[in-house]
Image (cartoon, rainbow, N blue to C red; front, side, top):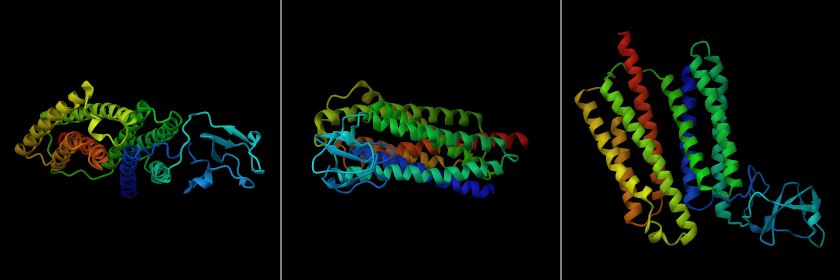
Length: 344
């Protein structure tokens, strides 16, 4: 049962990363309002593919909750009815949560796929929830963390609605991202707890402290990166999506701190990798940390000096998420090796 739990937890973790990738694509393509309502999309479970589907048309059947665009405003059907020759407001009410009323089929389906991946994530999470109770007597902490993970996922779903209702408020998007990292960390904890620990790993107090320091620095860097991204989003709204060369012409101090801080993060992890190798501690995943860091730095340089080449923004975000996950797993390995070391 524990092996099955571990496999499902890994599937859930992969889906979390896919959600992050999908979210990054939504943001970089400006598709966040592709579906102006939540959880449906223009009142449909399967979104429209042509604007004719969301336009008012005479002698057409409309379902309760269906949304149409009338005079550049969203209108929601109050009941099931068939339209007459002329539009009558009595069958409709204005959608008041925001004033965005536009349709782009590409944006709509990109946002819909993002939501669909999130819904699919709920399937392995529910499976973990039920399986964890089978393992309660053997490991009650596993059950508690699983329940908490499902609870946080539910909060994330509610935040998804708030993000749409607030017309993609940057602060809410940032909170949405940080909670995704929390879900990721909880799943990594569950995966690590149900895996057999290698007895080749050795414990070193100094290295463990360095692992915590490196992880903390990366987390601070991610938070600062989110602040920079909020600034870039504001610049996109102000200057337009085609003015890439101007997005970072007059950046805030956050950008310069974020850029300089990356040097500290890289040097800390290089020193950490050096100590792990010299002491032969066996933490091979540290190699992945260095690879991810180098690619992350290169993608950051490309965004600044090459005016945000295609896919550089989502790549930068996904790499940061992968780095976060690997570093957190290394901490768990170190702490577990300490417990094993004490029992020997």
